[in-house]
Length: 79
Image 1 (spheres, rainbow, N blue to C red):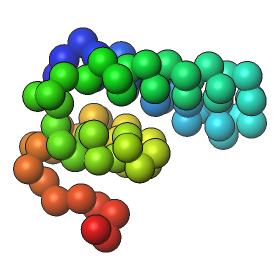
Image 2: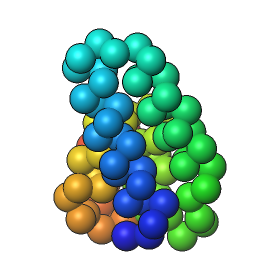
Image 3: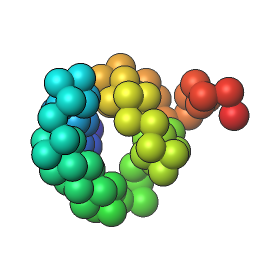
């Protein structure tokens, strides 16, 4: 896992906690950082991770980062 992916995992966790707490300021800050990190992902980033982030499936992106799934795993979104 790259440094960007590690930070992305941390920020997505913060986003999920902030959303559960309905902390709008923290949600907005986390989303801004997720967007920045998404743009920093290299071309070698797992396609499934990019898929989840592009579709704003943040819980699935976090699950993917926590699971250690290979980048060739099929999407879990019915697509």
